[in-house]
Length: 194
Image 1 (tube, rainbow, N blue to C red):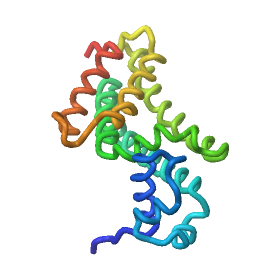
Image 2 (image 1 turned 180 degrees about the vertical axis):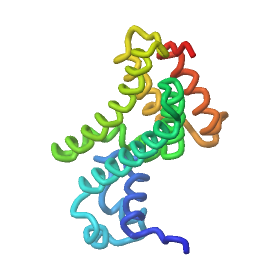
Image 3 (image 1 turned 90 degrees about the vertical axis):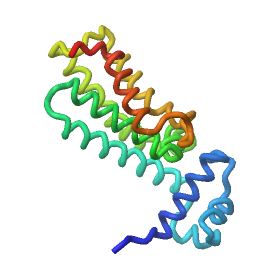
Image 4 (image 1 turned 30 degrees about the vertical axis):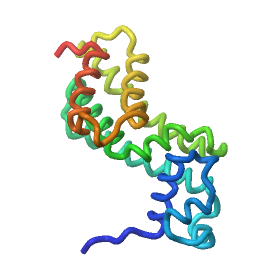
């Protein structure tokens, strides 16, 4: 039995669309209501504020990204080079397939209140720790020769988070082709010897 999309999901999807096109501060509750084909009063029955919508979008996108990348690393096997390949592949697919949400998530953290920012920073720190763990284990066991592991981690993360700002589904590369290229770029970044 197919699950129908909830009203709450329709509101969040409309908010993502408007935040991506107009920015958080340029989007009104009326814009979101129009995009979800609801009244403004209906929006408020699901969300107390536009701020809560932004926070929920960002928590959802970061949590989904964490789950996807964590699963990829666990399935990859014990070697850091295999884990990094799986991690970057998942990271790139996520940022191409969930482009609009990822773009909002990366660009609108400045629009969150202090509570929302703390939540999002904690999730981002968890994602960074996953990359750092894989890279540091690779350096320690000799699989990676980079003399700058902390910089390599930041570069790898940024490779993914920057993609939504320029990637277009109708462009020259499919998400899979992008992921394969970025796996190779990741190996070069950490100076993988395997």
